[in-house]
View 1: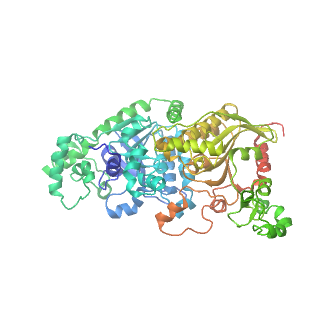
View 2: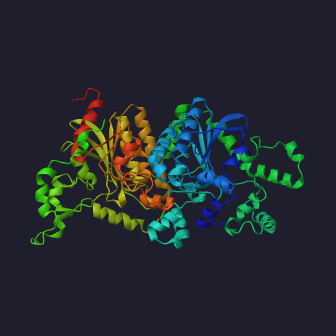
View 3: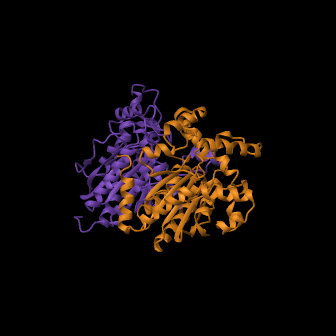
Length: 326
Length: 294
């Protein structure tokens, strides 16, 4: 466990930290991905579609950084163009039509800043999402699962509640950007991270998020951490050189999943698990347990939010953001 | 329809062009005019007497480059005389996340601009039609949006909603204020919410984008108007030009992120020169007014 803000930033950005596809595959059943913004293109930095959560139909949206190198390039490392935000909005409006709650998984270094992105109105796309999400007549939950890169993250995080997974970060600017503007000195990145107050703990204190969600498997337990680290390191000496990410190595090395590459029925039933070999069984149980705390919280969230009227939802959401910074 | 007159250089240009050729460059034979009385145009590089530029509404007499206006100069230019009632004049920022050097920066901004924050909000009249108006102050930490700017703009829209008034916002900004961290980012959501609730009541919001309008302000209320107009050649974009160049490792095309560029790409309704801004806005307000005195 680390209290250093910049270490947390590195953990949030860790190469094999679980991405949106992992969350979607573990928490939902029967996910059908949908594509396109109906204006310009399909942006693969944004995953979106519909699925069941405990039998409740939901619209699920995620910013996806990608798993292997090829996937990362395909997904532009999780940096969406305007068409990605417009696709997300299209799907959210559809959720409103069919009275489905919306659950967003946010993980991005920022909205993409290229010529095409500016030409197609990156600012306008984000602005429209902020407006429309604020008054969407269906429950919205947003969970920061890695990096919350400024406006590019906020465009999917105007929600009834905003949660952060442990060791995720959320900031108006990256520590590197901040250090560059303030001090023109890249050795000051850690100092900038400290100043920005971007950790989950900071945001909870500031009243910007409602909850910090831990991973299951007692991953924050130090002893267990050390034991898993030792085993993981022994197996993967050459793979993972960045020791700052060791909190995650112990989980993700053991539980590497590339769900979309396989099939869409990626959740496993208990009897299916029982039939696996020991190593694979451990892997599957580990994965399920990892997302258990989040699963419980989502269940509780939905059971409350889905009883509210549309007016109550919009009013509560507006007041939630209204009071920030007063 | 784009008004052809928007591109017309001010009349001053033709009749005084020759005159300016003579005194356009600082005349070495007349060094008695002190330096601070000259104003140099960054576009055409000519220099003029500052008073002359001021009397042309801070627009270059030669090439029509639009110099920066302070928040209050803008309001004076647009609103009917003596019609402005300011809101929330005493709101002032604190160093909410204990960011290094922010207190000093705030003090310096206050003393150099004479303002307490980066936006002036209130109510006024244009050709006798009442409207809520917000005018950003470019000199105040680059008109960046922190909690107070967010709060003032939100209150302006809420007041307009409660009193069924239109809103005009003159935008200029370097983006979200870094020194207030995540709280600044949240102001984007907060202001957007107020804009939407006002809009859902069937009320008009005109966004006027001035040079420069960037970052978190572009990605929130600046791009949420029913009508979005800009001054000529204003820099308007989401990411800053340097950041884009560094990301894509290419030089940017000519005119990229200018108001003219945005118009071509479909993100502006019109480009309106400063000298025509008041009459343009008056016309817009008349077209939206519900039997108010015309």
